[in-house]
Length: 181
Image 1 (cartoon, rainbow, N blue to C red):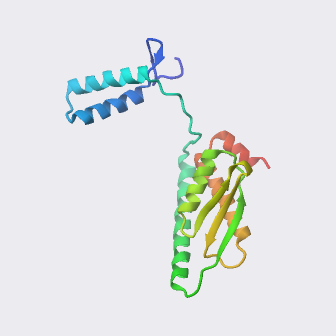
Image 2 (cartoon, rainbow, N blue to C red):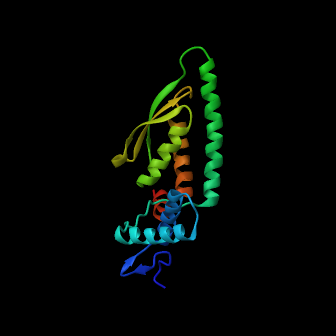
């Protein structure tokens, strides 16, 4: 077998069957009627389009690992609850809430992992990524609602989040990068 059973060759070019199936679904949806002629027309159109306009093979650099993903989601959900409670407390408390800008060093150099980490941090109430220095692997975070000097706590939390994100979505190279000092 050629290693790509979902993309057989047609007249010398690969035709990805999942893309043909998707284009067939779009074709039938646009026609608004599921009939044998529409399905065959969709298959023909999908095959011709994917053969004439081949897409490059892309690797987004993300892998999903179910157990690690469940662990990430549990911790993320808990963090959402605690952070929301903290922000609500400071909304109803008189006076300004404690706020800090904290620079956090990441261990990963993977852009997809950095984007996932930034997304997770920005979705938690009371924290937002203000700036990202990708060349230096650093994030600048605005953190709300943690009294005192929260630098070490926030850095530890981000390091733990980074480990969970890479465990849930990272490639083997991403995981190795976190293991090396």
